Length: 166
Image 1 (cartoon, rainbow, N blue to C red):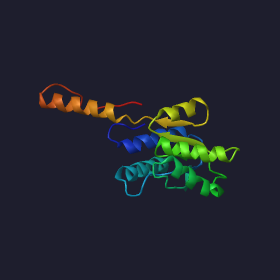
Image 2 (tube, rainbow, N blue to C red):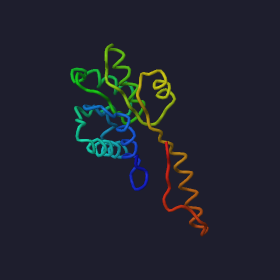
Image 3 (tube, rainbow, N blue to C red):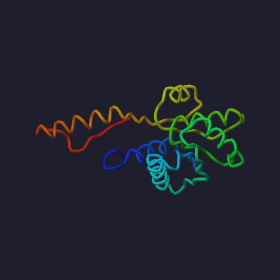
Image 4 (cartoon, rainbow, N blue to C red):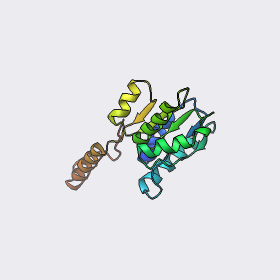
């Protein structure tokens, strides 16, 4: 995992890719095209996946960060499922849509990984339906950054490198 010197997007991708150890072919549902954060997260996923030459991205579908959209898009692409070991979703809401699609087609579907650690994703992991999720806690990150800024302005000591762990 990479926190220091890396974007949160690459870090989330690293967590997701680490959870996919052994997967050789993946699908990566992405957020909306017009969303800068979605583009950054997709680039982070692509960078992290490129670090393992044994992983092949079979498809990159647009789930637009929405459960129903991800479900419908993934269902329409079910002809691509054979040989796909895992689905790396840019958020847990899309991961739930992929799980819905997988549930609608019983059998050995691909492993599913998401980002945000929403309660429904944690429950899906506990139930064995989903492999992993990465926590992205904006409130905690902003609190730590604000404290560092205030300490800097007051001339107080603070760490030059802030490490956040999931």
